[in-house]
Image 1: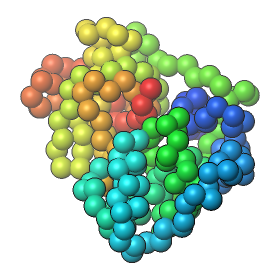
Image 2: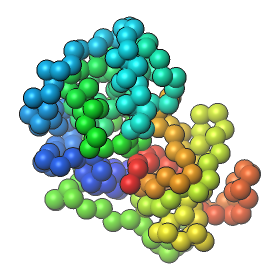
Image 3: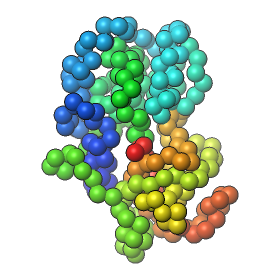
Image 4: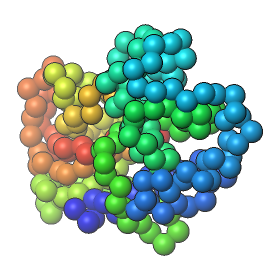
Length: 239
Protein backbone atom coordinates (compact mmCIF):
# COMPACT_ATOMS: atom_id res chain seq x y z
CA UNK A 1 0.00 0.00 0.00
CA UNK A 2 2.85 2.40 0.76
CA UNK A 3 4.26 1.82 -2.71
CA UNK A 4 0.88 2.47 -4.32
CA UNK A 5 0.42 5.65 -2.28
CA UNK A 6 3.81 6.89 -3.42
CA UNK A 7 2.98 6.19 -7.07
CA UNK A 8 -0.38 7.92 -6.77
CA UNK A 9 0.92 11.16 -5.33
CA UNK A 10 3.73 11.52 -7.84
CA UNK A 11 1.31 11.62 -10.74
CA UNK A 12 -1.03 13.80 -8.69
CA UNK A 13 1.72 16.40 -8.52
CA UNK A 14 2.07 16.26 -12.30
CA UNK A 15 -1.62 16.24 -13.22
CA UNK A 16 -3.31 18.30 -10.55
CA UNK A 17 -1.03 21.23 -9.73
CA UNK A 18 -1.71 24.04 -12.22
CA UNK A 19 0.81 26.62 -13.42
CA UNK A 20 1.56 29.16 -10.72
CA UNK A 21 0.74 26.80 -7.84
CA UNK A 22 3.79 25.57 -5.98
CA UNK A 23 4.26 22.00 -4.80
CA UNK A 24 1.60 21.33 -2.17
CA UNK A 25 1.55 19.61 1.19
CA UNK A 26 -0.45 16.59 0.03
CA UNK A 27 -1.24 15.53 3.61
CA UNK A 28 -3.72 18.40 4.00
CA UNK A 29 -7.19 18.53 2.41
CA UNK A 30 -6.89 22.34 2.04
CA UNK A 31 -3.26 22.40 0.89
CA UNK A 32 -3.94 24.55 -2.21
CA UNK A 33 -6.69 26.78 -0.81
CA UNK A 34 -4.65 29.92 -0.09
CA UNK A 35 -2.77 29.74 -3.39
CA UNK A 36 -5.97 29.35 -5.41
CA UNK A 37 -7.70 32.17 -3.49
CA UNK A 38 -4.81 34.45 -4.38
CA UNK A 39 -4.84 33.33 -8.01
CA UNK A 40 -8.58 33.93 -8.46
CA UNK A 41 -9.02 36.90 -6.11
CA UNK A 42 -10.01 39.28 -8.93
CA UNK A 43 -12.76 37.06 -10.37
CA UNK A 44 -14.21 35.40 -7.26
CA UNK A 45 -16.31 38.51 -6.62
CA UNK A 46 -18.29 37.74 -9.80
CA UNK A 47 -19.92 34.71 -8.12
CA UNK A 48 -22.24 34.00 -5.20
CA UNK A 49 -22.20 31.00 -2.89
CA UNK A 50 -24.59 28.19 -3.91
CA UNK A 51 -25.96 25.93 -1.18
CA UNK A 52 -27.30 22.37 -1.23
CA UNK A 53 -30.98 22.29 -2.23
CA UNK A 54 -30.77 25.30 -4.53
CA UNK A 55 -32.72 25.31 -7.81
CA UNK A 56 -31.22 27.69 -10.37
CA UNK A 57 -29.72 28.08 -13.82
CA UNK A 58 -26.36 28.62 -12.12
CA UNK A 59 -26.55 25.06 -10.79
CA UNK A 60 -27.19 23.86 -14.33
CA UNK A 61 -24.09 25.72 -15.55
CA UNK A 62 -21.94 24.24 -12.78
CA UNK A 63 -23.13 20.72 -13.61
CA UNK A 64 -22.18 21.19 -17.24
CA UNK A 65 -18.75 22.52 -16.29
CA UNK A 66 -18.13 19.59 -13.93
CA UNK A 67 -19.26 17.19 -16.63
CA UNK A 68 -16.91 18.75 -19.19
CA UNK A 69 -14.02 18.19 -16.75
CA UNK A 70 -15.01 14.59 -16.01
CA UNK A 71 -16.33 15.06 -12.46
CA UNK A 72 -20.04 14.56 -13.13
CA UNK A 73 -21.99 11.89 -15.01
CA UNK A 74 -25.70 12.53 -14.61
CA UNK A 75 -28.55 14.67 -15.94
CA UNK A 76 -27.83 18.37 -16.48
CA UNK A 77 -30.66 20.18 -14.72
CA UNK A 78 -31.16 23.01 -12.23
CA UNK A 79 -31.29 20.92 -9.01
CA UNK A 80 -28.49 20.81 -6.43
CA UNK A 81 -28.92 17.51 -4.61
CA UNK A 82 -27.02 14.29 -3.91
CA UNK A 83 -25.30 13.65 -7.24
CA UNK A 84 -23.99 17.22 -7.48
CA UNK A 85 -22.93 17.07 -3.83
CA UNK A 86 -20.72 14.05 -4.61
CA UNK A 87 -19.20 15.68 -7.71
CA UNK A 88 -18.54 18.91 -5.78
CA UNK A 89 -16.84 17.03 -2.96
CA UNK A 90 -14.71 15.13 -5.46
CA UNK A 91 -13.64 18.35 -7.21
CA UNK A 92 -12.70 20.00 -3.91
CA UNK A 93 -10.77 16.93 -2.80
CA UNK A 94 -8.78 16.67 -6.03
CA UNK A 95 -7.94 20.37 -6.08
CA UNK A 96 -7.18 20.40 -2.32
CA UNK A 97 -9.37 23.42 -1.57
CA UNK A 98 -11.48 21.84 1.19
CA UNK A 99 -15.23 21.35 1.28
CA UNK A 100 -17.81 18.66 1.98
CA UNK A 101 -19.84 19.11 -1.20
CA UNK A 102 -22.71 20.90 0.51
CA UNK A 103 -21.94 24.26 -1.06
CA UNK A 104 -20.34 25.59 -4.24
CA UNK A 105 -18.11 28.50 -3.34
CA UNK A 106 -17.19 31.53 -5.47
CA UNK A 107 -13.66 30.11 -5.64
CA UNK A 108 -14.88 26.81 -7.07
CA UNK A 109 -17.00 28.61 -9.67
CA UNK A 110 -14.05 30.77 -10.69
CA UNK A 111 -11.91 27.65 -11.10
CA UNK A 112 -14.58 25.90 -13.16
CA UNK A 113 -14.79 28.91 -15.49
CA UNK A 114 -11.01 28.80 -16.07
CA UNK A 115 -10.25 26.78 -19.24
CA UNK A 116 -6.86 25.78 -17.79
CA UNK A 117 -8.40 23.90 -14.83
CA UNK A 118 -7.30 20.28 -14.94
CA UNK A 119 -9.70 17.44 -15.75
CA UNK A 120 -10.65 14.81 -13.20
CA UNK A 121 -8.28 12.26 -11.79
CA UNK A 122 -10.57 9.50 -10.57
CA UNK A 123 -10.74 10.10 -6.83
CA UNK A 124 -11.23 8.28 -3.58
CA UNK A 125 -13.38 10.44 -1.30
CA UNK A 126 -11.89 11.17 2.13
CA UNK A 127 -8.39 9.99 1.20
CA UNK A 128 -5.91 12.78 1.91
CA UNK A 129 -2.67 11.13 3.04
CA UNK A 130 0.07 10.80 0.46
CA UNK A 131 3.85 10.63 0.22
CA UNK A 132 6.02 11.76 -2.69
CA UNK A 133 9.46 12.12 -4.18
CA UNK A 134 11.75 14.93 -3.12
CA UNK A 135 10.70 17.37 -5.86
CA UNK A 136 7.10 16.19 -6.50
CA UNK A 137 7.59 16.57 -10.25
CA UNK A 138 8.22 13.11 -11.72
CA UNK A 139 6.77 9.63 -11.81
CA UNK A 140 8.08 6.43 -13.39
CA UNK A 141 5.65 4.21 -15.27
CA UNK A 142 5.86 0.47 -15.59
CA UNK A 143 6.64 -0.74 -19.10
CA UNK A 144 4.79 -3.63 -20.68
CA UNK A 145 7.86 -5.85 -20.21
CA UNK A 146 8.01 -5.00 -16.50
CA UNK A 147 4.32 -5.80 -16.07
CA UNK A 148 4.85 -9.24 -17.62
CA UNK A 149 7.59 -10.27 -15.18
CA UNK A 150 6.60 -13.19 -12.90
CA UNK A 151 7.00 -11.11 -9.73
CA UNK A 152 4.67 -8.45 -11.15
CA UNK A 153 1.94 -10.73 -12.45
CA UNK A 154 -0.10 -10.79 -9.26
CA UNK A 155 -0.66 -8.46 -6.28
CA UNK A 156 1.84 -5.81 -7.39
CA UNK A 157 1.05 -2.12 -7.04
CA UNK A 158 1.69 -0.57 -10.44
CA UNK A 159 1.33 2.64 -12.43
CA UNK A 160 1.43 3.04 -16.21
CA UNK A 161 0.06 5.10 -19.10
CA UNK A 162 -1.76 4.25 -22.31
CA UNK A 163 -4.96 4.61 -24.33
CA UNK A 164 -8.29 2.95 -23.63
CA UNK A 165 -9.48 0.97 -26.66
CA UNK A 166 -12.60 -0.78 -25.35
CA UNK A 167 -15.08 -0.21 -22.52
CA UNK A 168 -17.83 -2.47 -21.18
CA UNK A 169 -20.12 -0.99 -18.53
CA UNK A 170 -21.60 -3.65 -16.26
CA UNK A 171 -23.68 -1.86 -13.63
CA UNK A 172 -21.36 0.38 -11.63
CA UNK A 173 -18.19 -1.38 -12.85
CA UNK A 174 -16.21 -0.58 -15.97
CA UNK A 175 -14.22 -3.33 -17.72
CA UNK A 176 -11.68 -1.85 -20.11
CA UNK A 177 -8.91 -2.84 -22.48
CA UNK A 178 -6.06 -0.39 -23.05
CA UNK A 179 -2.93 -0.28 -25.15
CA UNK A 180 0.38 0.82 -23.68
CA UNK A 181 2.91 3.25 -25.13
CA UNK A 182 1.16 3.55 -28.47
CA UNK A 183 1.48 -0.15 -29.34
CA UNK A 184 -1.77 -1.83 -30.37
CA UNK A 185 -0.44 -5.28 -29.42
CA UNK A 186 0.52 -4.28 -25.85
CA UNK A 187 -2.87 -4.73 -24.21
CA UNK A 188 -3.82 -4.64 -20.51
CA UNK A 189 -7.29 -5.30 -19.05
CA UNK A 190 -8.63 -2.97 -16.36
CA UNK A 191 -11.40 -3.41 -13.81
CA UNK A 192 -12.53 -0.05 -12.42
CA UNK A 193 -15.44 1.05 -10.24
CA UNK A 194 -15.90 4.84 -10.26
CA UNK A 195 -17.64 6.68 -7.50
CA UNK A 196 -21.38 7.09 -8.16
CA UNK A 197 -22.19 9.53 -10.96
CA UNK A 198 -18.57 10.62 -11.43
CA UNK A 199 -15.82 9.92 -13.92
CA UNK A 200 -16.45 7.20 -16.50
CA UNK A 201 -13.89 6.66 -19.21
CA UNK A 202 -14.43 6.12 -22.93
CA UNK A 203 -12.56 4.41 -25.76
CA UNK A 204 -9.89 6.80 -27.03
CA UNK A 205 -9.11 8.39 -23.65
CA UNK A 206 -5.39 8.70 -22.92
CA UNK A 207 -4.96 7.86 -19.24
CA UNK A 208 -2.59 7.12 -16.39
CA UNK A 209 -3.60 4.07 -14.34
CA UNK A 210 -2.72 3.04 -10.78
CA UNK A 211 -3.80 -0.23 -9.26
CA UNK A 212 -2.97 -3.79 -8.28
CA UNK A 213 -2.23 -6.60 -10.75
CA UNK A 214 -4.53 -9.64 -10.67
CA UNK A 215 -2.51 -11.94 -12.92
CA UNK A 216 -3.18 -13.02 -16.51
CA UNK A 217 -6.80 -13.90 -17.14
CA UNK A 218 -9.34 -13.79 -19.94
CA UNK A 219 -12.45 -11.74 -19.28
CA UNK A 220 -15.84 -12.86 -20.64
CA UNK A 221 -16.76 -9.60 -22.35
CA UNK A 222 -17.20 -8.88 -26.02
CA UNK A 223 -13.91 -7.67 -27.47
CA UNK A 224 -11.90 -8.83 -24.43
CA UNK A 225 -11.76 -12.62 -24.86
CA UNK A 226 -8.00 -13.20 -24.98
CA UNK A 227 -5.96 -13.84 -21.88
CA UNK A 228 -4.25 -10.63 -20.76
CA UNK A 229 -2.77 -9.20 -17.59
CA UNK A 230 -5.62 -7.69 -15.56
CA UNK A 231 -5.27 -4.74 -13.18
CA UNK A 232 -7.78 -3.69 -10.52
CA UNK A 233 -7.56 0.07 -11.07
CA UNK A 234 -7.76 2.19 -7.92
CA UNK A 235 -7.30 5.49 -9.74
CA UNK A 236 -7.39 6.52 -13.38
CA UNK A 237 -6.50 10.01 -14.55
CA UNK A 238 -6.58 11.76 -17.91
CA UNK A 239 -3.19 12.47 -19.46
